[in-house]
Image (tube, helix red, strand yellow):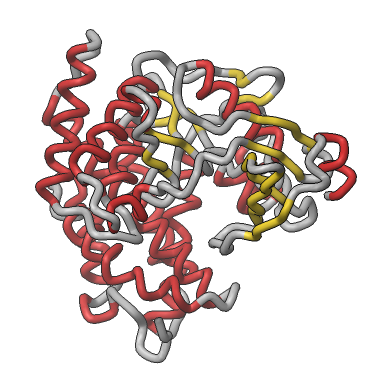
Length: 362
């Protein structure tokens, strides 16, 4: 790390480590003569490798969950490639000052402390921030998803293999935590097939750029900038080519903070209006169905991930988010397009088990 910082001219900087999160990365704020920067440190042995763009599902499964789910793993070069793509569009991704992907170091612009979540607790106008974030999505969706992120990173498709692997986490990890047993083979197979059928209609549409983790902890409010540049973007290394609704539901069904249904409705309405203004009108009812399906898919995944963080990684604080995530998922499953899946969840997971498991802690 010191050798990397020396090559970048930052070896004399003061180091201020930042709190960790659910990932294996860590971030260190650097201060050099009053100038800030951020160091990303991604241990190269901490993640299984991603798969090649043309890998088959069976080849991806052989490499492990990161490859199946199309996660970047420890590939820092993907973060750099996505940052350059976003900045070329006039969006506020951090500038890349220096990078050493081989050893897992990236020195980036420090966009400050104005995370949406923090700005809102300090009195920022919630509607203003959320509608600005919606406008960023509309700008991203004004063009098809790129196939290649220069110089050599394919933007992977968020395909059925990845989406089904994600929802499978619920049956794999939440069942033992909440029900004291593993899901049976028949239960898990039915779950996968119901999800396969629900997702299939939306996987045929031309994909757009999907940030994949678009919420108040990964967006920064930069009021000194203009228009879409007021929204700072971070944690985008797992970006994929997928459905228009995905990032919007990530924003308005936030696992870590309550978003009022009225604000969610306003965000969806603003998205449709902005898309229409830029000459890309969408059918409102069809998009509402797409939102319900991908919101349910994402929330089912999060239930599984948070149970895994507790059971495998010893991070019980993530259980405290489960009541909120389940409240979203219960609401999502009320959409008629998800009737068969709602029936499965009602049979498999009693309502009183859809929250913080007893004895799990918070």
